[in-house]
Image (cartoon, rainbow, N blue to C red; front, top):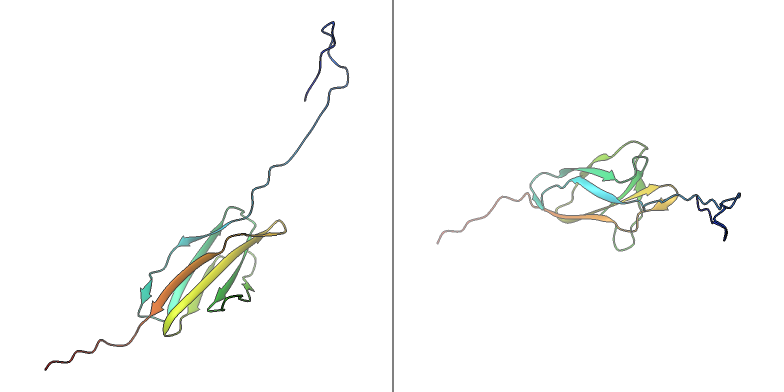
Length: 120
């Protein structure tokens, strides 16, 4: 509350009153980060947000403007199947009508070919 005083020091009988709510933008982070090079096609991602009620959307190898798939409410873990070579996983959070400005991004390479050695 803010209350002014008159010239004689008498407080204003109807003080001004303001209330507001500070809302932080929704963010998405990896709770754990998988390795950058793997031999197994299955990879687990665990997502977290600064908003406990957030739902997560993800894209796997979706290109430059990926279509995101929404996880069920309350789910933050996801196992994906990699393709041979380079893979890209993108995730974002949605809460309070906002979508996170930043996207959590992870790149990795699936290389399950055995090494070749030539002896001459």
